[in-house]
Image 1 (tube, rainbow, N blue to C red):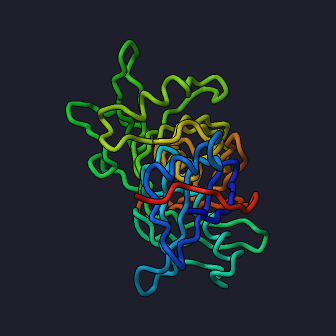
Image 2 (image 1 turned 180 degrees about the vertical axis):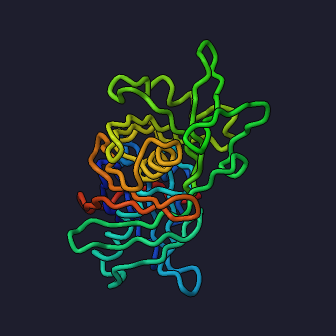
Length: 288
């Protein structure tokens, strides 16, 4: 079968976007892996699918599949590209959308300058809901919140801030993201048995109270140029631990994101770019 797609990127986090508002393609996990493959497919960190509204008061449904073909709950940079896609393709004339994801309803807002702001929802801190197995571990208090020790073979325990932005995140503060051992520690944190659904591992460098640098090893993908939900998680962790102010500029390897959070019980707001790279068609094996 031959299907149309759009290649998009937000701060270097790149996506293949599929329009299933008129028909379902019936794609399998293998199809999503092929689309994401940078040698034998289109190439992307995630595959985003647009579907019709599943309920009254909702504009669209938004599905996210990682490069390994697995479906995940949330993708912040993808949400911005999703909003730009449905507007540019004439699927809506709204500037504010209500979009159903696996993690709940999000509200992207298209700005006059071309950027998109996304209400990413309220962060979750209860370890069991992240989910994170904290049994037998003793956290240390810091700035009104806490960090958890993650035991790793042949290393001192790694102190992490653990939370969910609709998907699980573990944030580690480092002195310099350029020299942080992301390639080594990232996959070990991601697949640690304390995280039963795996986890996105963030490496946070605080430059000052309103500016940070960040690298993220994403669950099911590896390190990406930017991770929107990872930027939200890192800033929320930094605010709760006493390191950051309520509005922070996050510098990733792919670009800058603005993150704002007013504290526990409030949603996180993320603002950043969303751009179309090209449109195309690709031949995929028929579903079996």
